[in-house]
Image (cartoon, rainbow, N blue to C red; front, side, top):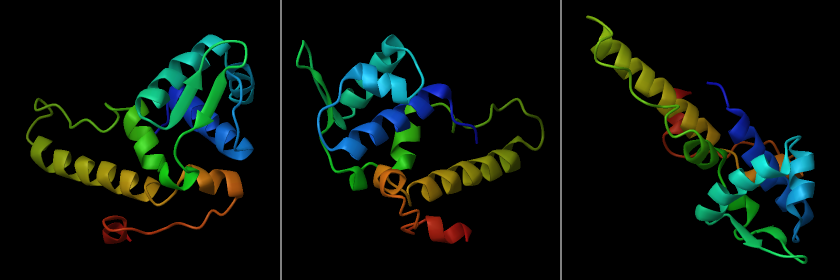
Length: 140
């Protein structure tokens, strides 16, 4: 699986907000994500719609987490930012399409399950300990 640049920016912005535990401005978030303010603003809009980040416009504006970083799972961030990353294979893949489709679906599900074992808080606090939940165990 490959993360898109947009997903990397989203994780960086969420991590920046979680690290500070206060409102930060979009320019700082963009700088830490090594991207432009405009591109960061596009990602912030998606994170805001998901309910993870609150925004305030104007001179005293900025961004802040609306939920605890422990509740923002990396799998959910990837699902939001890369909705087609786990699309099913096209039916014109030949005679193996059904079996291959099943395998690829299992791989995608397993990857997301493993990402769901980690939250933004794990990236901030350096915990790095997976919280194995439900379906993630079926692969191991």
